[in-house]
Length: 137
Image (tube, rainbow, N blue to C red):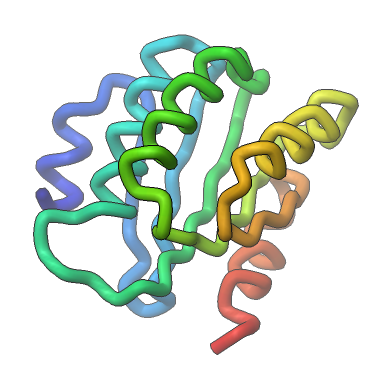
């Protein structure tokens, strides 16, 4: 599915692909269940496309509102990891503020036992996050 087709299915979450940098950017607007469901729809398309892709996935996730319910995320993330346990991604997550919930989210991601590399940035540090994603190239 291409970006335009995917975005027409989305009510809240926005997705774009920066071809020059090979970065998938997902904008997560709020903490609603609709946003969580759409986020995982996009994530499945990126991590497990119908056509072959290179194994080097770079994600830039921008969380504009509150952090969604960890219960909702945990349920879908666990199912995703079980169905595709060997797919890793380098992920930069940007927040409007880094607080106690950020510590909880870091702990939660570590509990998933994924091979993914994750780093957190303030929402106004998008360029720094993109540079971090590109550092290993």
